[in-house]
Amino acid sequence: MTVRIASFNAENLLSRFDFSGFRNELRQDRVAQLYDFDTEAQYQQAEIARAVSLTDDTRQLTALAIAEADADILCLQEVENLDTLHRFEYGYLFKMIGDGYRHKVLVNGNDGRGINLALMTRERTIDGAKIEVLDVTSHAQQTYETMGLYTPDLTELQKPGDKLFKRDCLEVDLKVGDKRLTVYVVHFKSMGGPRDGIDGRTLTMPVRVAEARGVRKIIADRFGPDGGGKRYVIAGDINDYSEKLVITGDRRNGYRFTPEQAAGGAVRELTAGGFAENVVARRPEMDRWTLYHTRGPEERHLCQLDYLLASPAMVRSNRDRLPDIVRAGQPYRTLFPDGQEVERYPRTGWDRPKASDHCPVAMTFDLV
Image 1 (tube, one colour):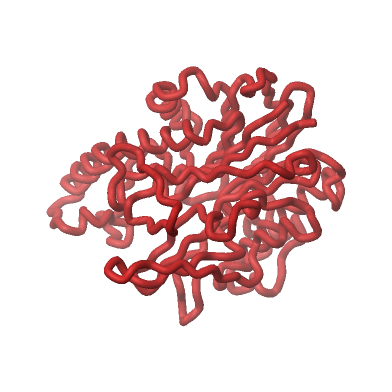
Image 2 (cartoon, helix red, strand yellow; image 1 turned 135 degrees about the horizontal axis):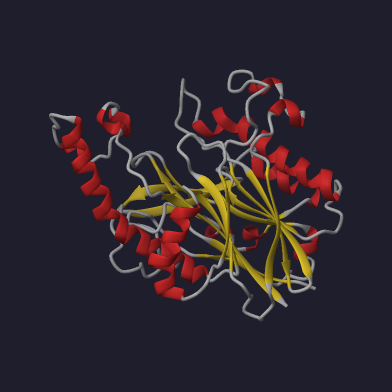
């Protein structure tokens, strides 16, 4: 019996408009900056037109990426609420895959923008095994203090009473056939931009490391420090990487992709001691990326931000399986290493529309 699990940051799967750009240029879409708006009402009308015209293509591409991932259990990041998820499934996914993800889980978390974690499952796996959602636990209310995870390197960033998880650690107990499985859906603190000569990853690292330690503690407190032989998967956007492909060169002379290791990081907190395996690391070094990052020609790289971290019990019988990374929804501005180019979905743009800035990661696991 097998089960296929995927994680995907769907990038702002929202059903509301954001008019804050009228008063804050930093929140204003780039196309709006080309125009002068005399009144807020005028700005709102233009913003509604812009968002609606872009959203249909974007969500068709999002649905195509999900359909290609073809998961039995789908972990999502950046979803507004259950109603939005229902509308998206009915209006887009249903037209591509039919009566698919009937079971949906979403709990409002801590993100100020209202982007939450969600999990959807089919009623049965491809093998015909029934999938049941047994229990759902949110850890959004945990603080550094309650988890005992406040450290001196957090002093400039957080207070002991602040929420540990910037969104949540959504714990979902499932039964697949006669096998139990627990999935932890996560979305860690974003890196942000550089400040005072320090890169964003380094600046915000202590927050993500604390989140990773929190997830590990939640699992260890329940199953034991070595995972207790239980089946669990940590799935989501960790917003951190252990390695990246640094991109140099230009269109005229060609691009070069140079692997570079990154020190520290949240991922290592979860894989240390064999607590969980980053299954994407089974792919070749040049072919593990799930996101293209650029701040212009001087700063470009490909890296893995999206993870399926599986417990020893999950990977013991899956040594020969490889995960899939769905890249056909990436915009044309994304630079691919030689031999990795894919045929983009119809109507994909240079920068937008796109399925997401992230790529879905999916893997089929044998449950024995």
